[in-house]
Amino acid sequence: MGVLSDDLRARAEELASRYPVRRSALLPLLYLVQAEQGHVTDEGMHEVAELLDLTTAEVEAVATFYTMFKKAPAGRWLVSVCTNVSCALAGAREVYDRAVADAGEGSREVTTDGLFTVEEVECLGACDQAPVVQVNYCSYARVDPDAVGELIEALRRGEVPEPVAGPKPVEHAATARILAGLGDERG
Ligand code: FES
Image (cartoon, rainbow, N blue to C red; front, side):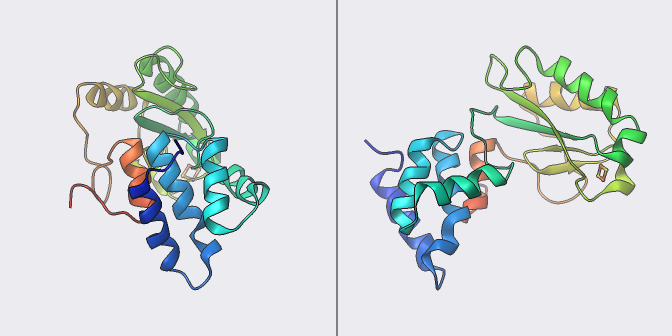
């Protein structure tokens, strides 16, 4: 049994057909694997290479370049704390430390309950809103340690707070489906 079901392979073919050159579908197909497996595995990269007539090394080079592709299991909620200069000056280190502590054991990889992964990220391009925290790539502005603690507790209760702009985040696998181009299950 491969990583992608027959249905998902058909979706992958449909995604590849959107581009004049099949290899241009590499990023969407990697997101498709991430949506299916929760992260991008060696088997998933091998299948993507086969589908797009690429070598596994070519696929791996791309998958390891972009940090949004996870090579290890991630939590349902990926909490990304910007610790670059503007956010650091506004207290991002304390925000990160609080997020790691409140998310629970293992949060730098994935918490034992599978809910959270906390990571440090480079500038998110919203320095005027520092410190910036993203949950599954949706931004929250001027987040202090108490605010990140409340954000994590809300997610733990099954509540998703409104981000600073745009729709609320969805869980990590559903986010990958959106980024693959398969649409938002919320409609
Ligand atoms: S330094 Fe954090 S958003 Fe720019």
